[in-house]
Image (cartoon, rainbow over all chains, first blue to last red; front, side):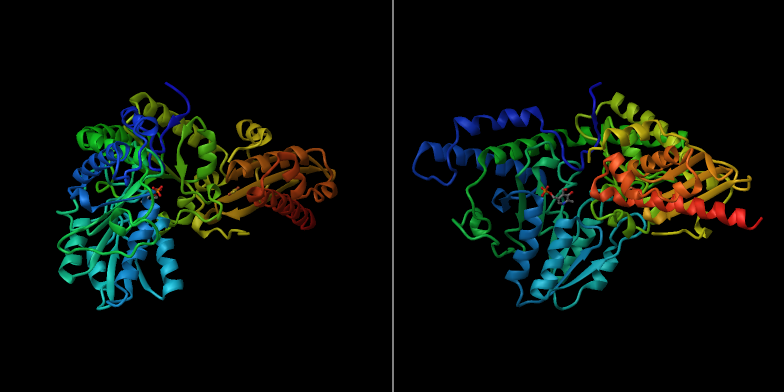
Length: 405
Length: 127
Ligand SMILES: Cc1ncc(COP(=O)(O)O)c(C=O)c1O
Ligand code: FES
């Protein structure tokens, strides 16, 4: 086993060596500009890009012409929301999204509210973190131009009922954008079947390179149009200017091809591993709470809270394992995870949460080591915790008058 | 964030971790912070003839909070009640090399010292 162990695959993934291999020639030999129409260097680069576009489109059941390359899912989310609002502002000024979206959606929505006077509905989620299709339907007004709901949450892994939301959007003639950054390549995503009109995703979450992502933009039924957010050479059918990052795109394509071939096997293997990790921990420790949905969740995600133990100290005790926590102490803002808070998880349990993100290269023994280390550290920190001591003495922590500062 | 060596040392080898009986003679207990804020510190002192002869802590919080309280117990031992009241959070920040986002952890430790001293005083006065 090599240390540190990487169990933070929602943040990013290591690149698959097969992806790197596919990319390498495009740095030095095939270095052409894909927009150069007059020579072999350009043609060969363009061919690399078009192959990748097909590989990417295939994974999500789209047409290659519907893929717009961006720098990542953050840009895709910005382009989708801002691009739709600018293009369709005459039709309406209302968009619907959810409270557990990634910051790239939430902050874009906030900007649209303050700078463009757009009205935004932030739908609540249930205690498992799921958006209700009925809430989506009820929030629609005659001014609604866009629904933006994420495929799967990056902290808790909960998978939303995308197909049902897509159906409602279609029925009402409203565009549906989905931030599928955590879902694509991990579980089947089908833009046709799910009725998705615009979709953001990113290569570095699926064993591809950082700095490249895509926005899927539907071409028919309906033909979606978005206003470009960057002026320039009119690349990507005028939607996103800038010389294409050919090596990154080639890597993105290869990563998608591998996911298409290996996703089912990866998911099956990782969900067994994840369930074993969960079972081992809950068997050894009391008061461990699962955050997110018990079944409708990403196969490689586990998010749990350990009562009476603060998350950052837990990470510090497990420093040979790369993990993340919803604790405020790990964030610059000193606020605990807004995602967990949106599910109604109490602040004290939000501070105690740990996210495990397994990946293609995670080994059984690594997960076993992590379980053992977590159990040891939680036990040690509970010994050190005044809250645990009080709870053991039978004091109801909710009735205590805390001297908050 | 990278932790200073001293924080790591206190975290791995906490000094004086544990509890005294609150009712015990000469014991002052300070509990500060709140679970919702992600940090609760319990600091206890045992006083004999105006001198702190022993101190213990239990902390729910980040590594810096644990280290701050662990350090506080080390510093408290052997000090008179009056001297103990002069420990400042900035001394803790300096000793542990705490970054700006962790200053509140040291403030909590200072508050815990003050609360323990006040509790001791209250118990002594009511006798
Ligand atoms: C759900 C979700 N959306 C968007 C992003 C941003 O992706 P990128 O890093 O490609 O900009 C992430 C990654 O953190 C994510 O998890
Ligand atoms: S207890 Fe939260 S940052 Fe120290």
